[in-house]
Image 1 (cartoon, rainbow, N blue to C red):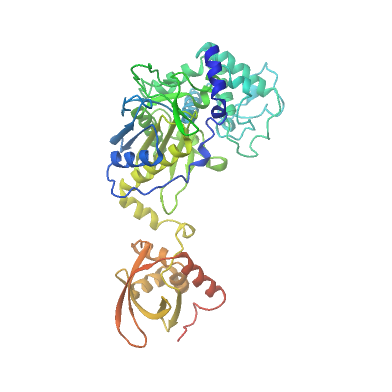
Image 2: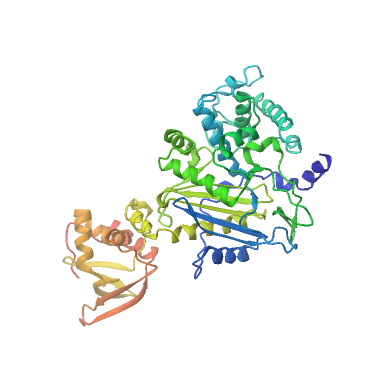
Length: 515
């Protein structure tokens, strides 16, 4: 234990930031991976781009693994390759496991979402600001708990089990004796302490350790038989499993197989799994979100996945649809600063994506992971994307136009492109009459305004999503000759100019403008 304490001191600059990475990633890198149809090819590309020691990923669709890949070394310089079946430290993905375990105890009647800190520690000295804090507030980072424990707690390395349970309770009660950082429910503040308190509450209610509860309530029912706590065991000679790595100056260094944050904060982030187990765990949540009853009742799944502040639910972040990703995603990531992991499930596509790395270069691992998630999602059931985009609210559509200006000759639009005026005949094969007819049917008296300001959206709702450029067939008003303008860019600048002109009264819905 003393040697481990020295090791923790050595990596303390890294440990302080542990598990506080999830906020950075919802809009993480969506790198295009041209020409890479397979997960293996995409993974190889992003691992090389972000210079990661090891990287692995798995995709599950409709309950079955469709792709998996792994590349790199278990330990830098060892020559031993990572494999798809390896075990990976999950960091803060552990939080959703803790929340799921607690949800099972709630269904069993041993806990409740609204149970308070005071109810579970009736004999302890609890500051009045903590007394009415609920289990759900602890799980949604709205409890008022600080981000991390004091350095003395983070340096403590008890044996996992009864010893870590006793130290966890001691650390939790020390926090609860002092005023919380803010009133419960007032705001969101990501907290390893809050999840550790929740874990200690589960221990107090059942008499079992957090590790035993995770095995009983989650790993056992889902048959996650290789799951464990802390990094995987790996000998220096044979490197049977990946080991974590930290970046120091201009090189990366492997750490020992016991290097981790203190087991005291286990409920916040010390679980390990294989990729297949991680996907299977994510699939259970996916199934629950779709109304399934495996592990939990549908209403309990809904409570687990219902966000509070900052779109954070109980161990999951809900990412709402955007134009680029027109479907809701539930995700969480984690890192103990020596490993990285990301788990995402997408109900609209019935898919789960898991990405893991034994590299603590968080920004680089983050970018690689989201590039793999986004590229994998685009390739699965792409027809769903088109359907979902047609139903997006107006504010989520790109605001772009190929026209520098528009004027009306009766009900016929004349458009300016490259400082020349033309009568518009068609756009990407859609005739002007078709576009205007649809606009009238869809938007009534605002049909001209929509044509001018929301052409991109108008085309999508017609069933055609334009690219960065479009093809225009036009006729010169003076010469009357038809011509084709290829690769005309759709730009925000054009659309903004059209909108500004309209707001100044330069165009009207209710009357025609002639040249």
